[in-house]
Image (tube, rainbow, N blue to C red; front, side):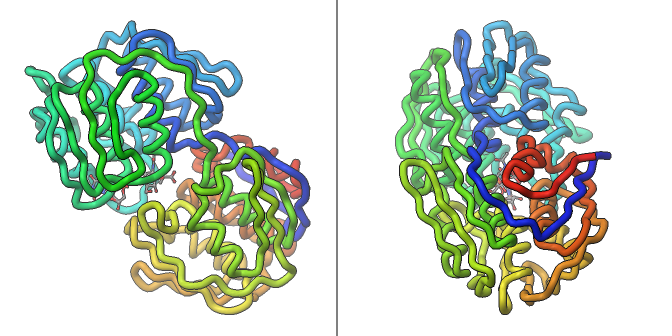
Length: 417
Ligand code: EPZ
C-alpha cells in the first residue's frame, strides 16, 4: 500500500495548473456511449477512477485510448450491456453508466456500485427516475436487471434531493429518449453543466443546465465531439488549503473562479487574500489565520462536501474555534480521528464537528480511509512539525493527479513510497 512521507512546515511558492475535473470526466466518459464516431476529451486527468471508467468502456466493446491528457473514445463497437461486479465495485460513479447503457441497448445489467464508504450510498433516486422513463428494474442478489423493451421515453421527474449522480443519469437516459424530460430540483454543479455542454455539442437539446429545472428534448442521433474538461474545483480548494496551512503565497492557473464562489470567501474570512484574473488565482495566506465561520456543506452553489476535509485541516491551525456541519453524507468525518493523531483538537457530535484551532500539529503515522480524507490528512501533515506518514494513498490517486509532484514542485517536502 503506497504512502506519502511528509516533512511539514515548509513554505510553498510558485505556480501550478489545476488538473481536469474527475467528477466531470466520469459522466462525460459515460456520455460517449451515446455518440457515433470518435470523441476527443481534452484535459482529462490521469486518475484511477478515470482508468476504471475507461476499463468499463473497453469491456462494453468501445475503443478507448489515452494520449497524455487526451482520451479518445469511439463507442460504435459497443457489443454488450452488462458491467461485471469487479468493475462496478471500483468506484461509486460507475452507476452513471446505467442511463447511457439503457439509452443505447434498452437493457443493462449492473451490480450496486462501490466507491468510498461515505455512509450508505443509496441509488433510489436513480432507479425511481429510470422507472418513470419506462425501465423495468429488478434487484436480485445485488444485481440490477434493467430493461426498456419499448425504449426510454421522456418523463417529468421531481428529485427529492438534488443528487448529482441521479441528475446525470437522468440526463444521459433522456438525451436520446422519445419525447421530453424535465427534472425539477436538479443538481446545479458545474460538472452537470460540463456534461450538458458535451451533449449539446453532440446534438442534444438540453435547456437549464446549472439551474434547478432542466429540460431535455430527446434526439435520435448524437455525434462524437471534441471537448475540454473543466478544471477540478475541489483540487483547487485542496491546493488553497495547502497554501493556507503553510502561510504561503501560490498561483493557481487554469481555474474558473465562479466555480469557487462558496470557497474563496471562507479563506478570505480567515485572513487570506485571493485575487483572480483571466483564469489565474493569486493566493496568499497570513502567518496566523482567523477561525473559519460556521461551514455547512450544501449542494452547489453552497459549500461543497468534497472540500470539507481539506478545510478542516485549515481550521485545525486557525486561531479560534471553527464549526463544520456535514449535511450531504452521513459518514464523512472519518479523517477526524487521524487528524487528532497529528495534534488537532476536533470533536464530533453527529453531523457537527467542532475544531479548536491554534494548536501546533506534530508528525505522526496516519491512515486515510477515503479520497477527500486523504487530501485533508496530507494538508494537515504539511502544517505539522516533523515527519508524517500518510497511508491509504490509493484513495488519493482516485481524484488527485500526481499530487506528490504537484506539492513538491511548490516546495513541499513530500515523497511517495
Ligand atoms: C457526487 O457523488 C460526487 N461524485 C461526489 O464526489 C460528491 O461528494 C457528491 O456528488 C455531492 O456533491 C461524482 O461526481 C463522481 P449525490 P454522488 O447523489 O452523485 C444521497 C468525490 O470525493 N442519495 O449528490 O454519489 C446520497 O446518499 C466524490 O469526488 C440518495 O439518498 O452524490 C448522499 O447522501 C465523493 N439517493 C446525497 O444524496 C440517491 O439515489 C448526495 O449524493 C442518490 C443520492
